[in-house]
Length: 271
Image 1 (cartoon, rainbow, N blue to C red):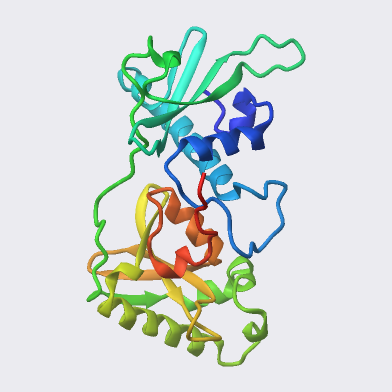
Image 2 (image 1 turned 180 degrees about the horizontal axis):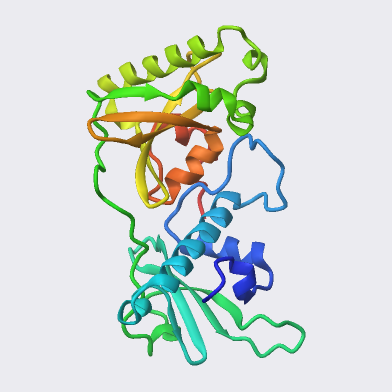
């Protein structure tokens, strides 16, 4: 079984510099927040950093449970070389791969040594056949249905400390908080009926969910996102996410385009 944690799998030198190089290799995209909720050591590419960690974990877990004949298409590990498809592409639409060599350093027990990010035309991949495929996600119920009912599990949300901590501090103790939450979700449902593109897909436990912007304290900017699970003809909302969490989860599938998420990130600057 290969480790599901990137840093348990390989020795990775100069990680932040490597991520910056990846951001330059990939098609232009914003990889940091305008006003981050938390300070991080990586100020330039925190979104990209978490994306790569999550994609590695996904591919490692799938590799561990794949049939032998399918494993190479998920994560190539043969002899002295290994790699996987990051799900990112160059501006010329060439797939980008994360590459590793067998670790020969004596000061670490890691089996692999990170060698860099390359596109599919790189000499590093010339003996890799077949190339690992782009990370796959379930496509069932990909399109949000604005006519479906949304049922809110208010008791679960307001009874869970993690969910409550994501609500705006001034209203956490409000006596009518259940009503505020129900009203905000109903407003989001009506907005999505006029513009269903504000419902952004994400994956949770290998199933598609949808994220809706929830306005609790102001109308011009959402306070958080509600994750909706797809049921048989209706949706269930049982988790609140911060907007940064919502962006990061949505980015696993594709670069978000909904305005309520894109306004979180810094514009892409020229290279």
